[in-house]
Image (cartoon, rainbow, N blue to C red; front, side, top):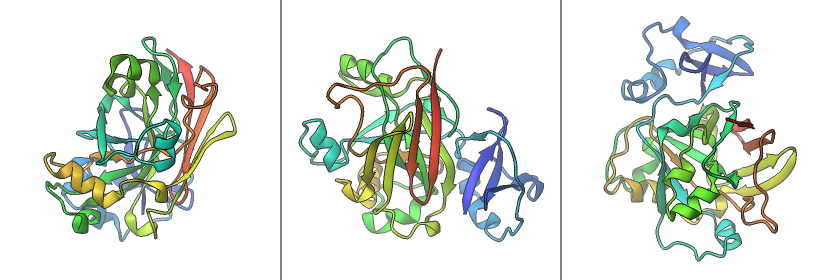
Length: 278
């Protein structure tokens, strides 16, 4: 299945994406909660699985496929070629940090350029959506806790990131976590550790990598994070970015107002965001 949330910001409705059509799930299940913690806790993925409604074409905004996650956990330096381009050694264990939930953004919504940081950069990432609560999850059980996958752009304010000597501010500006375009359930993807990831800026390919280049695979990531951090349904884990970010180019390439950034992962889709001044 491919799940979406559609409608104006703050008024999104849950839906299914079927052959370019949208099924308005609340027309079938009026009491359905938004796609978030309650949705996953109460078994709505299983309840909607039998739906055969073909949906209809809708010219409508898509919101981020998950509503109000309790946390957005990200990984740094988790692709070998990305670590190499930055001149870093491969980390010995997953390097985790957080983006705050205010950064969450729709798959085609604008990226707002901040006033307090320059050097705005792109990072295409495979995002995991957690489907059930767990702590100290073993590698062998990790996939049982996954509701689905999305594309995320871990937009980064490098000036703030480097000047602060920590990452949370530069990673957490409003709109700095575009997510979507759909939530794809695991049964739709044969091999999650062999997917192409691409970033294009104004039509020019900047990143072209594969999830097989991850230093730490998905089960390892979930086991490590959940050792002492309880994961709850709707949480987002963004698994790192491949080589090709702007800041490590010679000379560096950074985003400016008017730039269009497309992040694409095969079998999931594309998110396309335009940078705009506040």
